[in-house]
Amino acid sequence: MLRATVPSGPPPAILPLSEVRPGMVGQALTVFQGTKPEPFKIRVVSVLRNFLPKEDVILIRAEDPRVEFSGIVAGMSGSPVYIDGKLVGAVAYAWSFAKEPLGGVTPIETMLAERARPRRSNEEVLAGGAAPSGGSVPVHHASADAPRADEAPRVDIAKTFAEGLGLPPEGPNAAPGQPRLVRASVPLAISGFTPRTVAELSDELRPAGVIPLQAGGGRKLGPPAPGHVEPGSAIGVELVRGDMSMVATGTVTYVDGSNVLAFGHPLFGIGEVYLPLVDAEIHAFLPSLAQSFKMSSPLNEVGTLVQDRQSCIIGNLDARTSMLPIDVRVTGPGVEPRLFFSPEGVSAHALASSRGLRAMGELLFNPFEPAVLDRMDVDVRVEYRRDVAEIVGVSLPGQDVHAGDTVPLKVTLRPYGAPEYVETVPVIIPRTVAGEVVKVDVSTGALVHPDVPQAESLKGYIDNMRKSYSASSIVVTLQTPDDGASLRGRLIQGLPDSALDTLRPANQTRRADAYHIADRTVFPSRQLVSGKQDLSIAVKDDVLGTR
Image 1 (tube, one colour):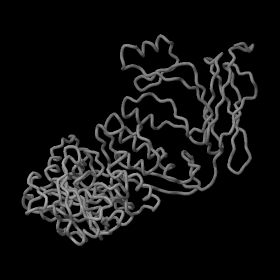
Image 2: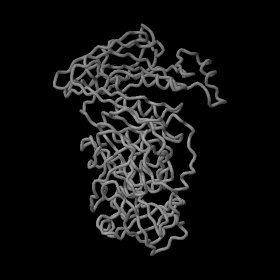
Image 3: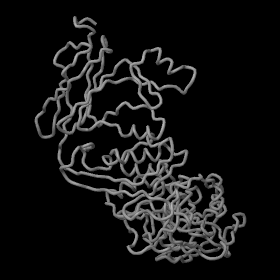
Image 4: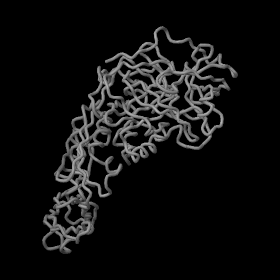
């Protein structure tokens, strides 16, 4: 681990917010190009009290030709502001759609107070040394109040990524075009992604004030260097490294030994989190009527982000966090078996629905204990063909169905570009449904979840995740009137009512969970199956046909 170069001597003196007055003149530091911070003139306009809960903001005007032309740009967040040589705070907010280069400064006192936040005593999250070369993402350790993965909707790959980090559904920039003081957005320098992916990430990350920009680049090749961190220098939070790169870039506000404060506002606002910090090179300012921003590239790993709070992010320059290596291998036809398919083609929704990506989020947010993932291997086989048959009809050969019989259920399938055909699925009618009208569901295995007990440990949680039906199978489900019990990680069937009442007493909440027993028949199909059909049948209770 190479130690980053930091300024020698004590940190600067502080100018308290109580002494800030309109009309005061000072300077801010930021990188306009390269890696060296440069000053620009600012003037205090006013102080906005309680702009955020328990947080004031200093309203300033930039009086420098470079900033007057571009305004407060994305990537300037964290630029330290000094008056009479004393640190006032960090540039953190910009006035949207303004003709004047107005900005908001987070008081340094508010930022320094964030250092008192308690942290978990967990050494697993910090590891000496960097991750292996190649594609990797940070191992995210969710806070105790983070949402469970099985409660978060997964619509597409961008949303999966955003929810995996615990992003809020809406943020300060959720209403573009509205004239108000908003976070100076954080540019997310992206490389190695297609424009389509960048567009999808933009839609999901914009509410958090993060703007994916396919205008930066990944790290430069060559031996590792220690990097440098100083007030006004560019600093980034690395989300992905390797053949693909994603780095959220801002500016350093305050350095004291191994502690660094930056941004002046949150990145994602997810509290205690461990992500790599890197120094960065600024290529240029890109002025825009919609959103001016800095174009940047990451340089060297310099530390670890440890807190992502309302008024700033906090880093530890003496720490390194673990990364999760991910290898993705894409192959063509000829690989069996086929466990997942998408009739819509290769889409974000299809990728987000894959079991591997879902499993990663569910493991990281499991309710039992921290799970550290060593690596993730993704094997993708792409075939552009319509190899799917849709279930379009279900029928029985006759009207009389008796309990205990094995009936030949006729399932009609319609493949793409070919005539319909019929699969005969032998289904045993349970004796317990005698005299009942039962519903028969016929579905592709991809839509059916096996009965699993309520997990009581991480091992049971993982065992449940491994259970599924193949998409190339037809699953016939008959709902029975019997009840079972899930107890201590096991499913128990065939219990009399008295035993079920004993396992589920009414005078306590901690008891065996009830579930309705489903009788299932799994039939392998000659190709992938989609869709579902159902029908209701009256089951006779004896061979004479009486009910």
